[in-house]
Length: 248
Ligand SMILES: Nc1ncnc2c1ncn2[C@@H]1O[C@H](COP(=O)(O)OP(=O)(O)OP(=O)(O)O)[C@@H](O)[C@H]1O
Image (tube, rainbow, N blue to C red; front, side, top):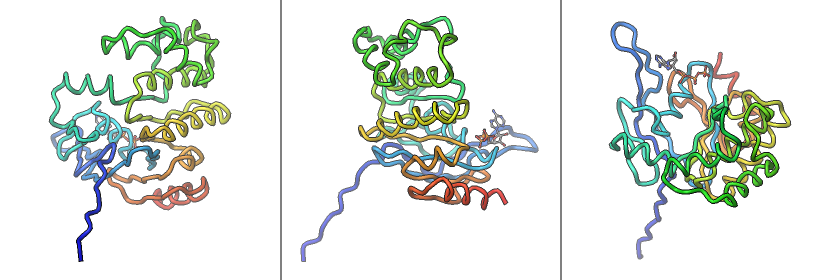
């Protein structure tokens, strides 16, 4: 009988034995402790866990914002743990997007200028029409000339998402993207993330909110820097129950 080969698909992001320890001396903190995870292309994964369980550290290591002490992080076929600082900076400008709870927009720039920034940093002259299109995609077509302080929190987060989307990154890393938003604004941001995953982009999102995690395709649960549980799909109640169980 002929043997069949199962084609292996490279995940968008893979962590292999990743560890990150802070501080040396007598009290080092192992924030991430031997994590193995794969994030398939076009999927949206939530990362949950108690405060201090290592969620942000894991996200920063996966996005190349922070160096790992051990293990490998692969973005597609690229091992970013071997990349130089220049390579990493280039990767972050082109293949990776990042959104934070605090939006991190530049106060003195308009929405359009904020969105254009990653292209400018990559040495590309942004086309005005392209910037308007991305802002329209997040429902802010009329707000391009406004500065962050003239926008609501939900609108600012949508500008931050537009800025992360403008380079069409393979992977979007989001650290509590809805943490500062009311439920209506949060839903709009989560709808946009769902649309991104639908276009084949991969999303890794740290959240404390079971309702936000329930919108993702899967949730991984961390405790003491380790992955200790995983839930595919699920509703907010199922996510919350798992979270409560691991906080005991
Ligand atoms: N720069 C740092 N220096 C020293 N220790 C740190 C640093 N950053 C994080 N830690 C420690 O590493 C552990 C994991 O922190 P991390 O911020 O990744 O957790 P988290 O799960 O994202 O927490 P939270 O939900 O409260 O934001 C914690 O014990 C934290 O105190």
